[in-house]
Image (cartoon, rainbow, N blue to C red; front, side, top):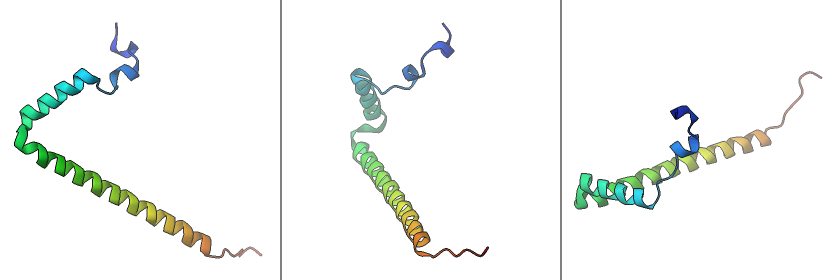
Length: 78
């Protein structure tokens, strides 16, 4: 059986219950109990900054679209 004949959904699926337990154990072993709160805090801060940047870009695009709607268009080919 070739790897190319395997469905792509099987290669990139979400971990199931047992796999999550293994992932959590590996993270605890690698980082230790004292580093986990710092890791979670950094992850939360990164997500917050990403969402702020996303909202900033969205508001800039909406403001640009509103400006474009406000400017009157004139036909110079008259």
